[in-house]
Image (cartoon, rainbow, N blue to C red; front, top):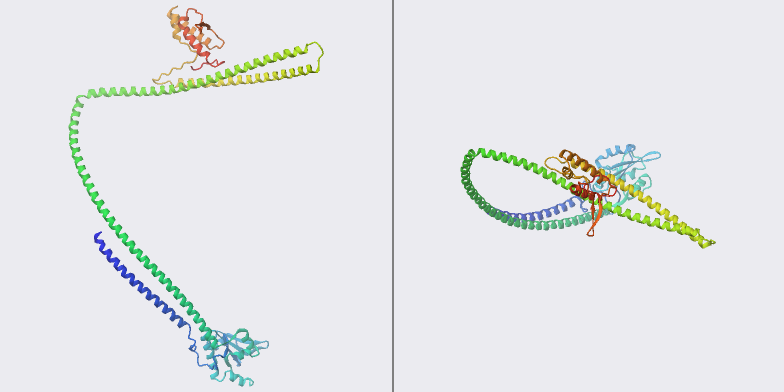
Length: 537
């Protein structure tokens, strides 16, 4: 960067000199442009004091003499006057006419024509050339006035003036209709006024352009100054950037050197460790040769442990699933038992209400019968009471009929719910029985199932082993059926120390299996009323 600072400084100085040269050259160009515009205006607008170019000396008596404007010439006489305007224009092409208009009347051509030249100074010069041409031959306006009554065949021509415009006839009418009177002095003053106006407008435009150029120059100077400031700021930023880059390069070199040193150290450590590992590997190879049998035994043991772990893991997963299903089922049964208890309480309340209502109906019937059989004449008040009691009795009958209908509907709904619940339970039992695979042993026990072992032990006390097993199976099945029967009540309630205990007659086998029957019967007694299906505990 140090090598680039000096050239930047030189470039700035050269830039400043170029800006000064540029501003001076811009000023010279503006002045030259203004002079060129003024010169062009002077060249394009003729000086009123100078005669029109290409115009011969004209016989103007006074500068106030009035002519027909736009400039027109009058041509009279001649045998060819009846030709078309284009043919006449070709004959007069030396005077540069704009248009030649032959004048016709209802009798035909009149032998007269109007030559139109234009509105500028050049056209006025051509008009006077046209007049001078005929004056030189003696065929001007004076020649026409001298020979007009002789019927001369020559052609005469001159520039149309005020008296020609006032002349009666086709010539005067055409000039009045298509032209105005204007003197050379009026034309010159009008031209001077237009020129002054044009020059004033151009001068104003030049002044506006000059102001605009000054504004542009000031803006250019401001932009140049701003660019200089920007370049200075840029140079400072570049210097700082180069300084930071240099610093970062130094840091990077130091960091790289440190990394290289660390890599060499790590490489040396790795080499030493590799030597140690090679030595140990040799030792391991020697030990491996010595203990191949031990390794094979360890691998076999490891495989066995893996298989055991796999089966244990599967059994654990199955056990977890079974536990979760059982917990959900227990929670569901709990909710169902609570709902059944609530239904029983509601039914008991409705039964109490029904009994009270029947009692009320009986009382009303008794009163009504008493009033009907009372001796004496019936007055109006007695009839009214009898009718009122009859209406109340009929309302009570209606109310009890509604309660019976509601009670029947509730019972039907409860039966349907119990049937659906039993179907769901049976499907769940089948599903749980299907998933008991592998090493997971999940026990499924239905409510009401008894322990056959207790019956077998009791029967072995009384008979041979073969007969004992058959008898135990028969007794177990019998008592299971009895337990599932909701109408069966084998226990006698005995008060022992103020507590109610259930008892069962002893038939010789009871001491061994009465406990199992009592427990199962008590569990069945806690289940919902009217449920005759096997359910989970």
